Image (spheres, rainbow, N blue to C red):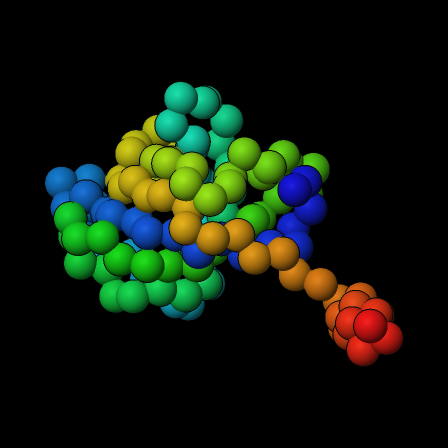
Length: 117
């Protein structure tokens, strides 16, 4: 998964002692990094949707990868991560699902194959 054609569905919790205000997860402007627990690599993401953030409460949110050429393949179902703003851990989460995107052309091709069966 080293391209940008997927969406992460995650359960996340933001810590109230680490942020003054809750982030807005629905406007596409919150771009933290995820660091998989036990690793050191920062993986840039953009949150694109989610429940309203209530500090110290688990919510569901979705995020897209940001950077071409970065290996996001370790972000699989069940992966636990920290949410980083610079060097500060502002929250944590776990990947619930990973949705691969496909082009309309590929979708049409797959549907034709299914209809031939």
